[in-house]
Image (cartoon, rainbow, N blue to C red):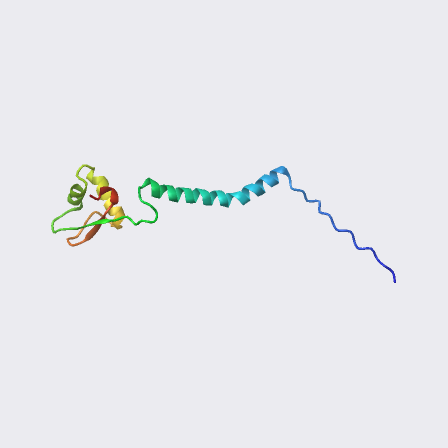
Length: 115
């Protein structure tokens, strides 16, 4: 019986250049950097607003009285602020389509204007 030699292992001629290594490292590090930025921004926004992430904010509600407009509510809730800004904040917070309100409607007041 004759023994045959094993075939030599094939060597690849593929080499990773310096630029290729940099691209590979950047692609591997990008998700980590993105996660760190996302966590930093989301925890920083809670701290900037003065609300901790674990404690829900207490939201004040106002019930619209007959004949009352959103402008009047804005002036009552935040007498020293521009009523237009207060109205915009109330409309945004409550998801209203316009500034028209109906009597008996309950509106959440943004925390920065709550008493």
